[in-house]
Image 1 (cartoon, rainbow, N blue to C red):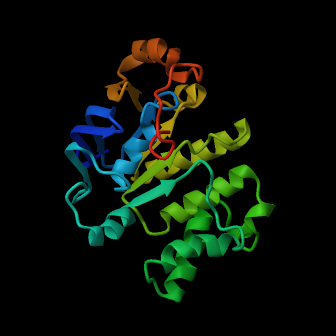
Image 2: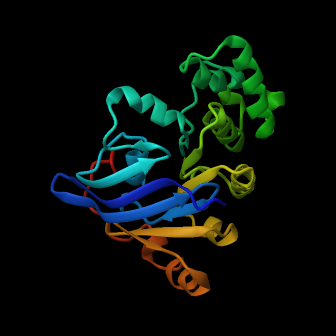
Image 3: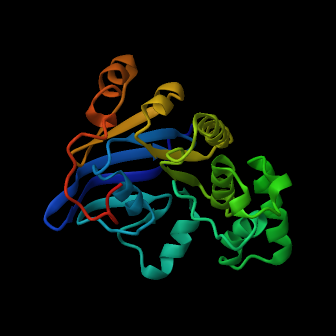
Amino acid sequence: MSETAVIELKNVTLRFDHNRVLDDVNFKLHNGEFAYLIGPTGVGKSTFLKLLYRDVVPDTGVVRVTEYPVNKISEREVPMLRRRLGIVFQDFQLLPDRNVHDNVAFALQVTGEKPKFIKQRVLEVLTMVGLSHRRKHMPRDLSGGEQQRVVIARALANEPRILLADEPTGNLDPKATKEIMELLRSINNRGMAVLMVTHDYAVVKKYRARTVRMVDGKTQTGKGKNWFRINLNSECFNNKSSQKESDPKLFS
């Protein structure tokens, strides 16, 4: 893991309807690092990710992703920023009328890549996720775990520097969860930085990595076994914990 930060937030604050969603947040993700962002529903985890791909901008502070000062770039630069990021969503967001190959190819078509390169790159990433033999199948013919692997292949198609995974195992059974986590760790072992949002205690406990907990809009970084024992059994993973009233578009 390189000490170069590919993501950095400095003193970031974000308010929405007079509620402070993020409160003086500081965070770094280094090149080649795997890290979790944990916390119950409603604490701002998805908002944190939206800052990174400039779906929202902070009220104060600095957000930097690779070489891009996210809160200062022009709208014209946003597509280039997003090409540095591969994004994996919980709900797949596959195109139902296109097969596996064409779903992955779409990510390359919108960036203007040539057909020959697209064909080659799609086969590469589908092979990487173990689905090259399913490339002609439609999304409806795939299991949940297979659909998530297609989403990961699509996220990797443009060779991003960073993979952002928002609850990638949230809709999966234990077997598929294991497969997806092993795939994400394999991708990380090839040198790609991965930031994964989750509230799944079992996943964080089994696949250990630096863990950043969100509490009341602030971040706390996990260090050592005591932190895991105290915090991973806390209200952080209790869906009955109190939640702020929020815009569903902004809160995870």
